[in-house]
Length: 173
Ligand SMILES: CC(C)(COP(=O)(O)OP(=O)(O)OC[C@H]1O[C@@H](n2cnc3c(N)ncnc32)[C@H](O)[C@@H]1OP(=O)(O)O)[C@@H](O)C(=O)NCCC(=O)NCCS
Image (cartoon, rainbow, N blue to C red; front, top):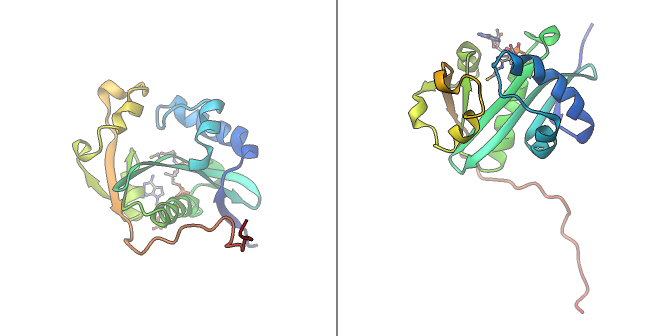
């Protein structure tokens, strides 16, 4: 029997599902804790994955600058892990960021094996932009952080901005 996986941008209707997915992993300090307000405020940074229509995974892409964005809040529901969903979420993020012209992406993680399969290499945490730590100070493990920094260079293909409203002709007034 075949199954359908779809990766798409998140909508306001996903907020409760995203919150429920992230919560148990935030409680284990694997990812940063986010309340519903925080998810609403960053909603345009989130992608979600559906498995046969069910919300199965989530990821967030946060841009710090032209040369650096972070893949964060990456979670796949344990019932749906090892089906390639984590890979599709990370690839979706990378395509999205590359389309915006971002040159490099990093993550702070405990699953270096997974990111290595995604083509990331381990780098020193000191090489990351200082702005990163303004978020990390909210983490319970900040003082004793044992996460590993990984990064990947994205394609430097020409940027194709998304056209929201096609060119229209207007009368001179
Ligand atoms: C890490 C996580 C997102 C992976 O999601 P997933 O959907 O199971 O991953 P995929 O099925 O897409 O795996 C892609 C590849 O990575 C490998 N992989 C997955 N998890 C791995 C792990 N923990 N360690 C090493 N390799 C791993 C898979 O075997 C697969 O390899 P293949 O392409 O050779 O078959 C998921 O395990 C998860 O949600 N973990 C808990 C939260 C977490 O740690 N998030 C990361 C925060 S930075």
